Image 1: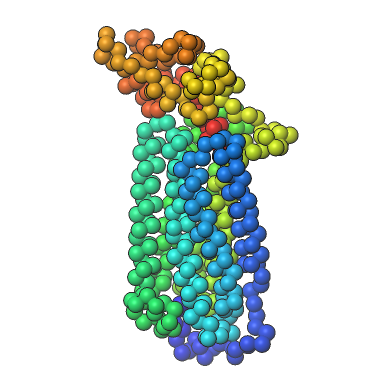
Image 2: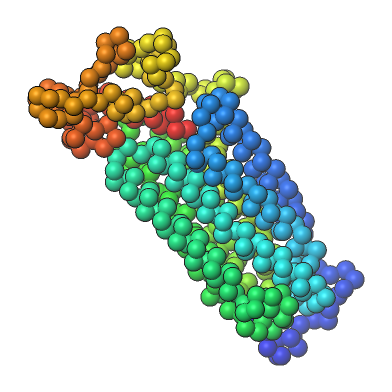
Length: 395
């Protein structure tokens, strides 16, 4: 909190403790509404993963772990209005200073692990979807950046004041770091990472030979993520105004609380909505969502079997095992050329397709399903269909 100079204090009107001007109930309304929506969307997400797909992944559990932090921030935002936030600084009761600062500090501390878990959840979903090494490596680099961001700004939070209790006990902020030097770099870097993570899958998704309708769905998913980014950018502007542009911090800071609540809830909602596609297919078929069942798409091309113990479903690839896992699990050493080839039992996989090389056999070193390196393999129509299926199962 900036300490206003005496000439600024003299320019303030007399305190009004009877009926002071108040920013309004928007913060409480937004907090309750969007937090409730976040809980509903996350509940539906886990219903889809555990009941419909029967396979929850790391991205789901990371998002579940983020929910307590989200609810803690939303509760802190609502409580903050009882301790001066939303009122002009000249109407602020300084007897509430300590509670106001504690509430602010709690929100700052909870925000860092919350955004870290949300970003890691998104990156974990990328690692499930990506098949080319360049994107996998890029995702892991971003995981490292997110973790480094978490460590750096959590350390800054712990040394915000020395001793830390001065943050809420000392009005003059003795022994405290200037908040603009601690908070602004954190929220700016957070916004930059949000945009960077969102644009990462664009080239990979654009390569998929999808129908126009599916491309529109993809664009819509990306736009959902950018809604949260926009909220974060607006919050960054209000944070700058609060820390640098005004001494009326309790009035301007109210907008920071509002946009923080919007940002965190939109981050959870917008990244979870694409996962609800199977729910919409089952309960709202009239909306036009088509089934993403891999079996119906690959039953003739990739083979079929009615024996689930072989890892296959009645319509083709079994839903708990991706194609590259199925192929890799049956690789054998070819004694003739010393290479790695595919040997599939006809009874187990009667119409399995292998990807040809110049020698007419499947070479996992050059035509690896997970890391295709030859242009003729990447352009193979069956591989493109395989990528489409990964997209459908991803969402």
